[in-house]
Image (cartoon, rainbow, N blue to C red):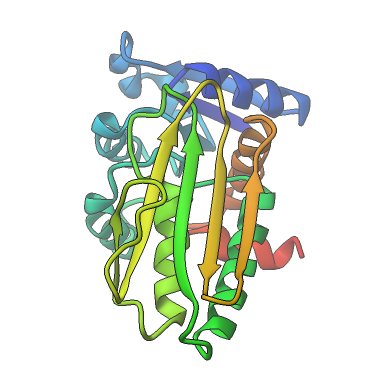
Length: 243
C-alpha cells in the first residue's frame, strides 16, 4: 500500500517505521516546510494519508487531502469543533476520513471497559466519577482527545452526569459534572485514569501507554482497513473485526 505522511515529527517517523515493517511504501512526507507537496503527483498517488500534525493545521491538511482524492487517517486532537463539518463532507461523498483520538488498540479496549463500567455505575448514585490524564510536556492541547472521548462515552451512559469540565487535580467538580484534570510531565506517552468515588470505597480503571509505538501501529492498521472504503469511520467501525 502507498502511504503519505502528513506531519513528520516523532510520531510521523514512528509511523513510517511501522508502515515499512508491514511492507508498505511511503510515497510522500509533508511537514510545515513543504506544504506545496499536497499538489504533487507523489501525494495524489497515495492510497491513504496518515495525518499526525498540530491542531491549527489539521483541518487544512484534511481538506487538502480530500481535494487530492486521498483518504485520511487522522490522529491529531484539539480541532474537534470542526469535526461535524468534515464528517458531513464525508457523508456527501466529498472525502474519506478515519478519525480516532487514540489509535492504541489497548486504549480502545479500555474505552469499551469504560462504557460498560459506566453503564453499571449508572445504577449506583452514591459513586461520583472523575478523570485524570497525564501526558508529556510537548502535548499542546488539554484535556487530551482520549480523555474527551472517555468523558463523552461515560456521560452517554450515566444519567446523573450532564457534562464535563476541566478541574484542578484532586479538586471535585460540582454535582452533575464530570471533572477532568490534566498533568504534563516528562516524556509520559499517556496515562488515563477514571475513578468512581463513594464514602465507602473507590473504584479506578487505568490505561498506561509504555511507548508511542502502539499508537503508530494502530494508525497503520486503520490505514490498511480504510483502503477501498469511503465515508467517515472511527475505531468503533474497525475494532469489531479485530475482536
